[in-house]
Image: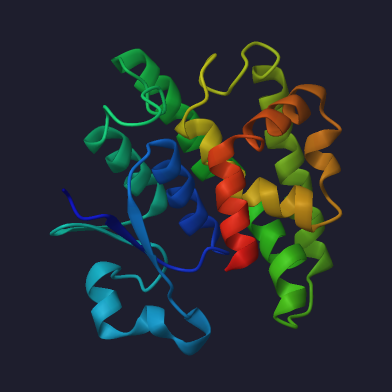
Length: 218
């Protein structure tokens, strides 16, 4: 029996939770190894060997080490194609291309403003860091424009890449969870009919509920 894959990092990390959701969707056994970032464990030499930028997550599958959560998710889907949710990364070139284009949209267009808002609104208060109201306003406007594009797209299809839940949708879960459940900016999503419907559906998946429970208990 193959050893479980290893995921290094705290569950509260959006990038770590993205990988955990993918592993649960794919029904892949994993071992979560906590990394205490406040103590600088992500900057120690042994960790840097796995993640040269000293960020989380780091990922190991036997002798293979990977970093960057979206690349890890693609690897999991390809290596374990016959396990769990087989549609998560598509089953033909066109499906994969559609998923990839919306994954790119998430990484390039959605993540920068939503990630900035998550930090300013959810993490800065916990860390006793002053919030930058100008930065919040700027990124809220940017995110609104991205969500306007999503609203149109989700009026045409059930999910971003088509009619099946995929990595493209999954990748949006971590930041959106913080903004909807942990800040007063949830209306950015819920006030838009199609985006609100989409969020309600993807956040209700059992895989994501398990990740949220891990975050609460971790």
